[in-house]
Length: 231
Image: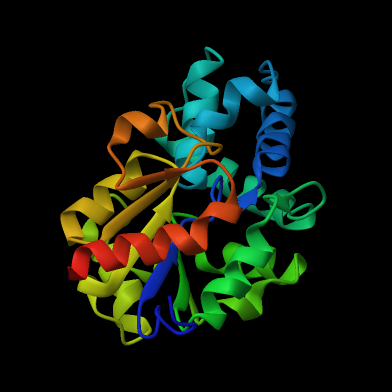
């Protein structure tokens, strides 16, 4: 294939569990909150599937699963405490997945526009990407507060694609969970899922166009999928 065969294509990425393994800092912050409230903390692997629907969901799910469901009135206070503490440790243990940075650079070299479409708040997402030194790989970050609705609503993905002047017919959503699959399918975009992310339903069961197990596979997977769509 020619070096620029992804020219004009949009590759939209989920963040938590797709680009970056953020669970240690997210679950670590949740556990601090739980312990401060006299509630049992979680082992990391047990709580990984709680990630992906935003911080409020993570907090509510964590307390509910620990046997201490929250009254709605308590959520805003705990949310503010969570965000303040998470910002302090946002990249203490979080790291891009192996091969991620190299794959992003390869996609850009082949002409693709890269963006982030995440249910994380935009400011938190930008802070994380900046702390990890990879913010400059993306043309835009569209978080939960920068879209008319969050994934799996297709308007979230549409907002990200519109922000970079892209065409949904030449867009691929790269994610790890049902929220990403739902948004891609409803929007009419291609769907690549990673097998190593945060999901209660195994990624293979979410019927992606392509399932990858390492970022080394991503650039060629994008070319194959877009080629198939245009055939």
